[in-house]
Length: 206
Image 1 (spheres, helix red, strand yellow):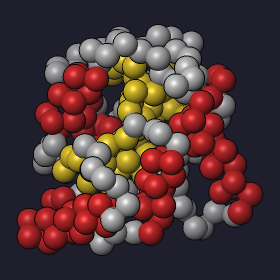
Image 2 (tube, rainbow, N blue to C red; image 1 turned 45 degrees about the vertical axis):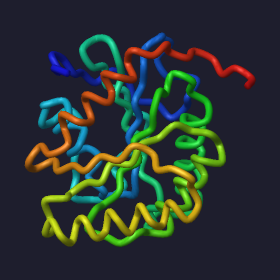
Image 3 (cartoon, rainbow, N blue to C red; image 1 turned 30 degrees about the horizontal axis):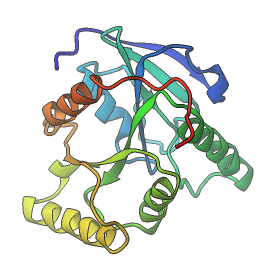
Image 4 (cartoon, rainbow, N blue to C red; image 1 turned 30 degrees about the vertical axis):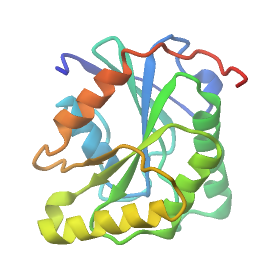
């Protein structure tokens, strides 16, 4: 897929105020400082599209970016930022849960995981919650350039094995580097495939 245009459209704290469109949305989420903004910028080829910061926890709203005038990247607040107060954490949880569970246009959620670390409890619990709620998601390992290939493969395999303790099959998995561009083509091709599916505009009872 070729990215011809990428532009910021709106920020808000309530799913009800998200754009009233019938376009696919692909949301990105992860622990604070996982490299979310850098990944979005790498995917779109726009270095300053999403705000990057050395300070974790900067994203506190639902941010919509319109891609090729035909689908959205949605930048969600990070989860598990311990330095925030309990009230702030609850507010962010409400924003995140509200979007993930209340936005039928969200075709897939990309859960970003830092490949430098062994399986983290907070990531596993979040993915388990997604599974319990039937949320379609893929795992995106970030910062793979920051460690050796052997170390990266070891950590990624550990995550897979940990997931298989609870899951019968693994979700789609992507391995990326915002520095080298690794994984960009695979991610965009996956989104292009999903773009062929009908867009949900309301939830239906199964």
